[in-house]
Image (cartoon, rainbow, N blue to C red; front, side, top):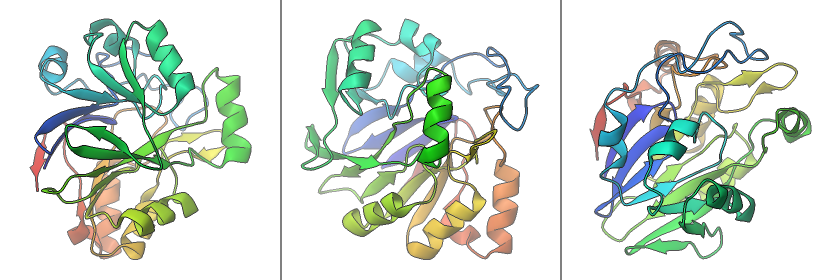
Length: 262
């Protein structure tokens, strides 16, 4: 298994001999206007460039997994440039229909119950809580975006079990996923992205600590960091927090472009 952190939530997972592109967002640095209701209302994003050219990222992949279709996970640059015949897994029929409108033609909705097969690999849709629903859902609706998001569990006979949390805070759904699948590795979206009157909409430092305390033998890989204007937690701050709370040995915080091999 290899995990290459590209930027933000965009990663390439090589698993069971196949290459999975997660949440493609290919905009150049500073392309998008500041997120006015985030903690950094004057900061354009992405705040960093892609570490490698976009065509080198998407030309050699077998499948895309779209955990949800917020613009920091699947943006216009990805829509315009990714080949439309590539296999794409969506979280539900609503996202699938939008991907069809964007021109994609080889689409499946990922299964939560029996898992979705791909080349002998089993992919399981897992639930997310993209912020506290009572507040976050209304906010996302006002912005013309959906609240729904998914995580994914990867299983294959010759690989360790991998759990990609997707955009979620620490919650019962994450605990139940850990209980059910007993992952060896967890990729955690943990920049503590925030919105006014809503609070955190993905994992914060305490949430990462909670994962470690709940599953102390799991290796946690930090993703979705140092890229968007509404993030409140940096890689440097997370590393400092993990060391102070004595779980830094269980945490890997890759830089953009870095490849991890397990």
